[in-house]
Image (cartoon, rainbow, N blue to C red):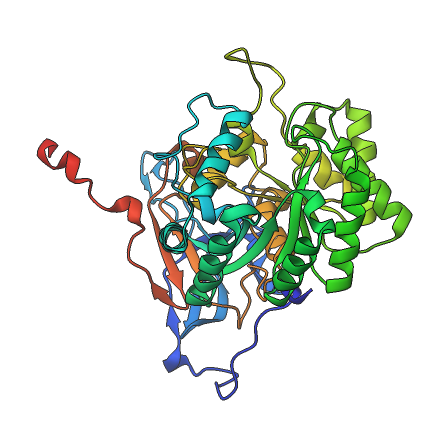
Length: 456
């Protein structure tokens, strides 16, 4: 994959900048997992997996990483003297592996106050009947601007691609992809019922998606209605993707019924047919309801055929586990840590933003990180605690940079108003975003709210 290495300086730029061209940043605490693994003088990091370093920039690239002995924890030492606060925590800009730009910000006009999946689907279909190019352009532009300023560098969006919503959604999002190229890399997945790919219209759509560098998608497994021909529909999709050289990203097992049935069907086809396609199983949440031994067996088979998983705790926690107006104990969520231990590549995404499927969200990767660390019990001081937000989605999207800082990598950073993981989890942090060596204006959530002006 191209994400394995660091980008090289552009032609004509000096290979070794002179000191006068370089610009140092103040000390920062960075996860060792996001610093050059080949730079031995950096050490292994502290118990939180963090290292204090000084980064030296050359224009829009990182020139050097210097070890730094600045440390401390705000408070008083044993003798009553003040201990300085540690440098701020920093990470590289994150990657969103599963979103829906075309329907974002539609909750106000198409709410789903019951909160269940049936209501979400009905409202989504109603909105799609009236969707226009101008609406999707406005939604997507707002989303990408916020994502950029919050600290996202790439985003994969599933696109409603059947019926009247399909044409305006693709036209708008392809335009936005070019408009935002070089700031937020946008990857698009065609979302249709599986059976659609077996039709003449499906073949024509697949060829257009492949020519645009997109992926083929669909829905597999409960709670969506079953046609009885899922195996043949799925086989047709995989053959088509293989012929066209497309990746595949499916909404799989997005409910509590028949746990893991969609993933199991996909595995059986891959084991039988021998395809080695890049396939992502988004959601995969009903796996979490299987007995532990069954979860392990399924996860090991997923790893053996090369499947990846994108877990989506925000939307799944909101939609699932409802019965008769009550919250049930069975709230499905992909077993992220078990999947990781079995060798499955796992990323975490935000999914829906202010639409009928979830009324909240704002394309803020730090809020997703904070929520997911709690929901999935991921320890951020361990490498696998950060990989689902950084290196794994970088690989799934086949990005040129894996998000690890090395000499020559982009001078891109997300600097947080927190000095430790505990502080990050304690409260939403302020932040500054560095892009190609330049600081962006503060993100939009820091704009003053005019409704509060009289309360100052």
